[in-house]
Image (cartoon, rainbow over all chains, first blue to last red; front, side, top):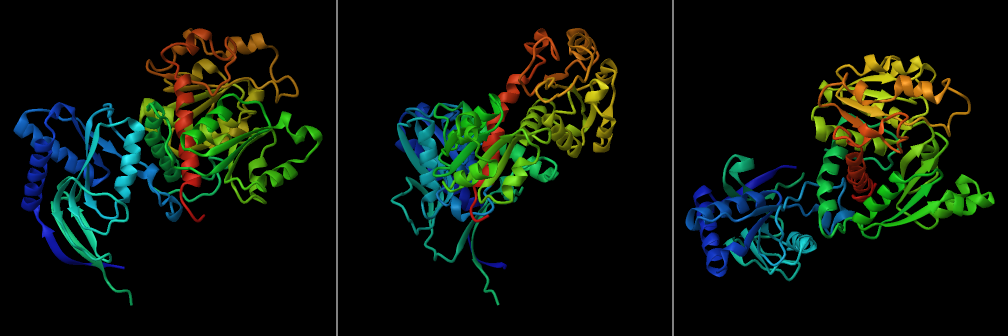
Length: 184
Length: 308
């Protein structure tokens, strides 16, 4: 089963602009930057989190701690998955207790990943706030979850697939909408 | 990375990829044990039975802690305080426990092959926690994880396994695992306890322990299993100690950065000098720590997905 590309929604320049704006909003909302930590959700949220931290460093000359969260162990769809998903490390080398945590992911869809991420995070400590930044919000929420910072709202149908490619692992920056081609 | 098995019976039937999957998964699980809240919800609602027909400190408690850190419910079953003491057969005991719908049975038994026997009539996953003189797969896996952390690449290593090889399921599982990963293995010990037939597993044998130790990277010492020895396999404990005890002097023969491993329980002063057991070369307690992560990985890989 192949899939065909329907549209290219963002290129490198647009992604960069969206991240710049998200970063400005994070700076605006969090007066005490020293209390902010950024945590990326594996896999692509991690690179977006690192990019946001770099932009903050450029502007404010401050190093914000960046952590990596693997939500595999907190998924709610285990019994539906076979074989079991690969577990990777969670790497958060700082306490989250009482910090303002900005969670970062590439696409916000059903909200189930974010639910798992929040549960996982709260097991590590009690953050003062958890804020959510996503590059794409494609709608179709199944849980009462919303993002605080959104790169782009992208109305989609459920059939469509939103693909975020980042140069750190995919070779280039772009956001695509694809659709599975008909099976004959 | 794939792991599609229902049971873990031994290392022999695993391939290199499956072993690496287990080790990589275990590496990811280590971090959970250093958290303040050492628990993830992954195996919530799964029931595991810990069925031990032989004494154990490490393995039983390690499996219990691993299961609890994954939020599974685990029941400890001790043969001496159960209906086994009233004459119930193994199969009847298992069938009765199965009727309580567990998802996995972890079994240790003095008879080799017992875990396999269980799989012929059990619906649950069966995990071998040591069967007779056959295999002890989770021990070999935690040893491999420790070696990987300390030494990296297996293929360049010389591993010496010394002591009561004949009765050791730990030695057998380690031989299977380390030969698959490309390490060079040298066995040493009194000839009656290190039969030449072991060469068929692709290992070398050197009855002179001092020779065997030359340029070793990893030295794995084993306990004399007197409970399994019906007769005398060597003249005296004193002679055994003279020829096969790992002492600081003997340790000089190995590489400078060589590590000492032991599956426990240690008989201090017999196979391993007390000084060495507590020295910086000893990774014995790291082995125990890694045991939790490896057993979490096994439980996750066997019980984590759906529809097997």
